Length: 165
Image 1 (cartoon, rainbow, N blue to C red):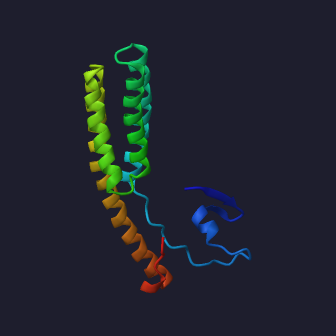
Image 2 (image 1 turned 30 degrees about the vertical axis):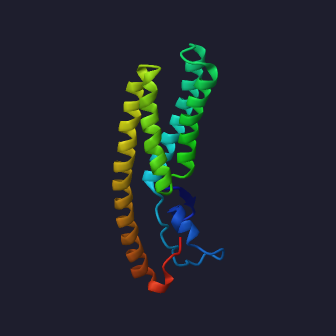
Image 3 (image 1 turned 90 degrees about the horizontal axis):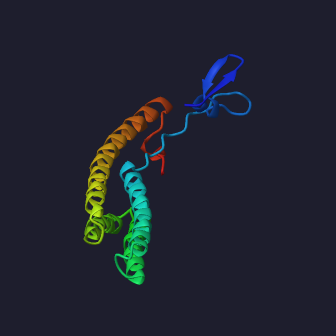
């Protein structure tokens, strides 16, 4: 939490923003709805996997493990699927594409044996992102509802004043 020095002591940024220009106190702003940890975890993981797809294509083409066009198609499918999944991670299509990317990464072990291990590592991270992210989202949502109740109690706001974030 950011703190600002004042003549009377130290105030938090929330206290600072709750003051009008003339120095009088105003009602504190309503709490903001939390962002999804699950979405963030999955997004970051899929972007990392897009880079893996690019490097996969470079290795396949550079070591001549397959023809160059095939190597780039494989890399484009893995990397492009990961980027598309990252873009759509807000809904079920993005999550489905994420699962498809995990399977595709494991399948690339056919050409490079180490990709079996890397694919399994990314699969474990994907499962952890989904499960832990969901658990964090549930806890954040519960806290948000408690903060809204506290805000209503201390500002005298009724149900119609709930924030529309």
